[in-house]
View 1 (tube, rainbow, N blue to C red):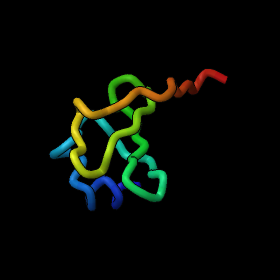
View 2: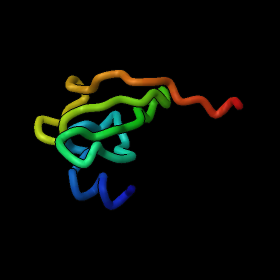
View 3: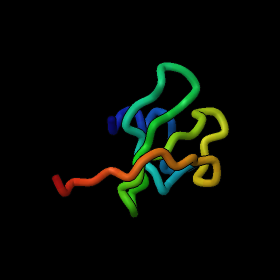
View 4: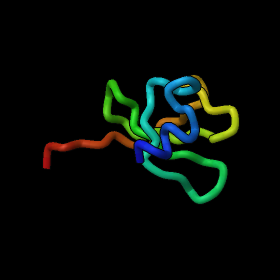
Length: 61
């Protein structure tokens, strides 16, 4: 996953996020670093502002 984030220069375009996957096409799935919430955003036009909230990820099971 680190390689994916480096390859797409996520730290420059959407620094609040860490990409964890994709839909196999244009959409990235990412975790917001500060909150642990999961978002989607486009690979092309990637930015913090383009993120769309999906789900809250919890480690309290």
